[in-house]
Amino acid sequence: MKSADDIYPHELARTLSDVARSLEAEPDEEWTLHGIVHAAVSTVPGVSSAVIIEVVGKRAGPRVSTDELVRKCDEAQSELGDGPCLEAIREQDTVVVDDMSAESRWPRFATRASGLGVGSMISFQLYVTRDTLGALNLYGDTGVSFGEEARIIGELFASHAAIAMSVARTQRQLGEALNTRDVIGQAKGILMRRENIIGLQAFDLLIRTSQETNIRLADVAAWLVQDHEQPGGAPRPRRR
Image (cartoon, rainbow, N blue to C red; front, side, top):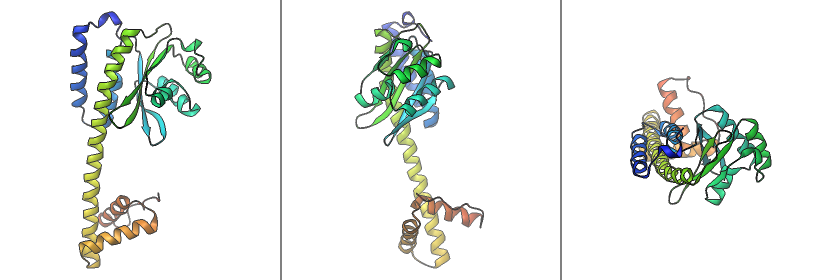
């Protein structure tokens, strides 16, 4: 954990550049997210723990954390449907709790968080141009409050983190799309040989099977490929 005196203005740009390069070098999305929370602790003054909250559809919940204690704290926010993190996501703003034991805006959450030993908290929305990705929650020990310098550094860090998170997510989605296309192609080939039909007919058969069984096309194709490689050994895919 850094103090504000440990970071000088001329060092901040270099520190954030080093963080950005290290995150870009992570091998996949999960490593990137873990890299973000651990880098936050070593970069933002006063921070002892960090959590990334991910937004999926209309739900928000903890994805990665530096320790289990603060993960439980953020699970409490998701359970209660209220708290500084959810406020940051909804209002697209930075939300600060200087003293959790005296916090009155979210009394139920504050009671739970104080009971877990949380002293202070600051939440930043993680977003890029069109997408709200989630929030970065930074926690301080009892007696530690986040001053203006920590808030400014935290906002700059959160901006870098959001870009890294977005790039990692896009890379994962592209990889999944390529894998799906490859699996569907394999499934088409199996049906063409098995049923003595052309590619268009095989694809139509996959689509009809997906619709009739209410199972995603990609899952139908994957099951067919697995069953072809291990007859009778592939579990049937679940309905949507």
